[in-house]
Length: 124
Image 1 (cartoon, rainbow, N blue to C red):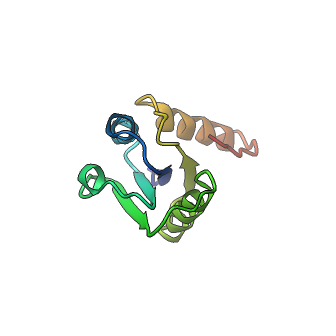
Image 2 (image 1 turned 45 degrees about the vertical axis):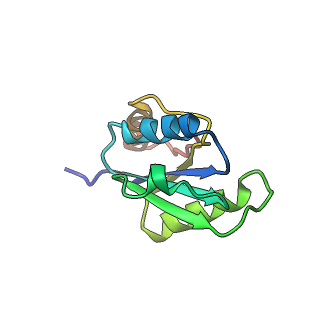
Image 3 (image 1 turned 90 degrees about the vertical axis):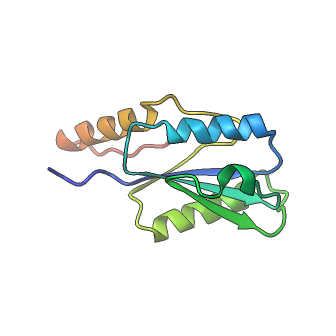
């Protein structure tokens, strides 16, 4: 059986409310695709109480805010994911969420396209 595609979800966050950030993290934690790592990147205001020690989560803390709407934390999160050998990097803003089968359905769609010989790039 082929090895599962390793998926990274990068979430930049700044000063979101506890409930908002928790909802985002919980939605990634609930994903049915097992080969997944969530990179939460604090843009100057880390939430250690919510993020440290969570399974399948890497918490990256930037020392100060960058005032560029999350571009710097997204880039740093993506670079860390690629350095960790992830096959796919996707982005989820802290005020959004995934349904439980979201990542699995995209990985499956990608695999079907590749099996048919169809070039398949995905952005989500």
